[in-house]
Image (cartoon, rainbow, N blue to C red; front, side, top):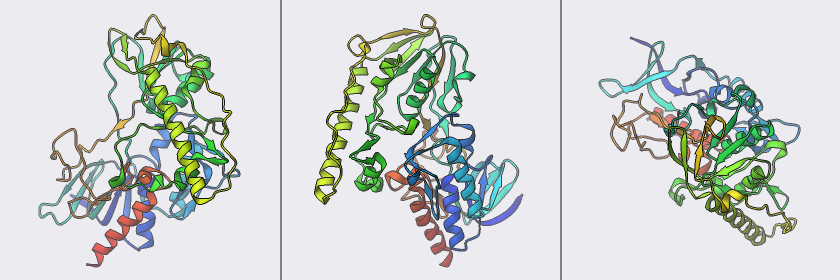
Amino acid sequence: MIIEQIETIIIGGGQAGLAMSYYLGQLGREHVILERQRVAERWRSERWDSLTFQSPNWNIRLPGFDFRAADPDAFASRDDVLRFIESYAAFIHAPLRCGLAATALRQTPDQARLIVETTANLFEAKNVVIAIGPFHVPVDPLPVGGTALHLHSSQYRNPQRLPPGAVLVIGSGNSGHQIAEELCSAGRRVYLSVSKHRRMPRRYRGKDYIWWYLALGEADTTVDQRQGAQPPRLLTGVRGGYDVDLRRLAADGVVLLGRVLGGQGGRLTIARDLGENLARGDTSFVEFTQQADEHASRIGLDFPPSDKSAKVLRNPTEVTDPVLTLDLANADISTIIWANGFRYDFGWIDLPIFARGTHSSDRVLEHKRGVTRVPGVYFLGLPWLHKLKSAFLHGVGEDAEHLAEHIAGDARL
């Protein structure tokens, strides 16, 4: 039975859903936000305790609302970001319905409206904006056997919650790096499986990397201009921010490994690609500084010169003498943390908006800047929805404004 009829339902009470609510509110459009648990739930329960945001405070913003901090160049903690999003919800008077998880989305029999089924009841709407972000389901770990505890990075909280013993972190993106660094600082024996990555300077010629990223126009690169998938950028705001070089972790005692290929009975097979991945990271660092120098020269920026005397860290012995097999028991590894990312879960959506059909577990969403082929169905907050910045705090508002205007325009027809 339909409990309530609403013009627009927003599914998800995180940054994307709230930005959407802001613009619909500005246009006077009726809407509600269905949130499965609490506002910004993933920041509450799926991030480790000591997480530090990778973008400086001055770049934390949502439509009509900036992050306030004593030091704009510092880096916010997990709880700072959570409080910011909570404050934003209060600031815009977001019409939240918390504790209602959407379990199904389909059209009415006449295809004129949309039905949202939740854990408690049914809603009928003209429009549905799916703003649940990209972090749906952890990527499945490789089967490796053994008795070690397996955790996804979204389940890790702090070193004290792990059983005694060494820890293997698989994946060297920003999450894997921060977690490995914290575990090493806590006195744990740490092994880090290094994946492809790009190194970036935290600051260059007096400006934070994010300043350059914006000035160079990277944030506004559209999906049509995208030149293939790129490895993640390594950045950190820990201890005020510094240049990330995984060799520094090695110097502190972390054992660097190549990519984990698989395993059986607790014995892992490791690729020979550690040196290659480190070298690629170095290449990206140099390429970025050259691009920044060219930009500064082209538009006449009077910035301090580049520091050519930066210390180059030596490769660890594992580069020339790689570890090709790792016996978890012999290495006393009691925990494996999989920092291997997430995959989408659109299994609850029963609509013809996917390239590979509506019943495949490997669904590829088809849309144009969040607008799908089914009238009234929109997506927001996904990576590369329209631009590189689409999934970020500083970028989601632009797409939200576009979709709100699209919804309001349809309402006037």
